[in-house]
Length: 94
Image 1 (spheres, rainbow, N blue to C red):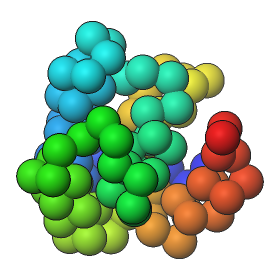
Image 2 (cartoon, rainbow, N blue to C red):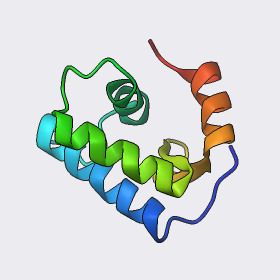
Image 3 (cartoon, rainbow, N blue to C red):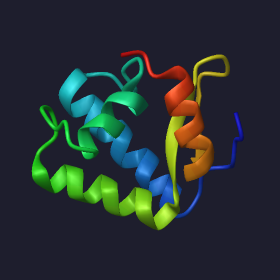
């Protein structure tokens, strides 16, 4: 996994994803939230509202990547969009 330190816009994305996980699942980061949230903003929104989808898309576009949980280290990491897309297709749980 190509990890990058989270700061700036990616940090804002990480904070929003964590806040939404807490809002909808009462957990800082529900298992596989990065995959579910990605699906939510790409056409299958059944949890997030329109404003949340728009904000996540904006932050992802501005940061040119996505935030994921490194479950081995139990920490959030930032991945470039190319790395994320590869990771997503190899590891999506559903």
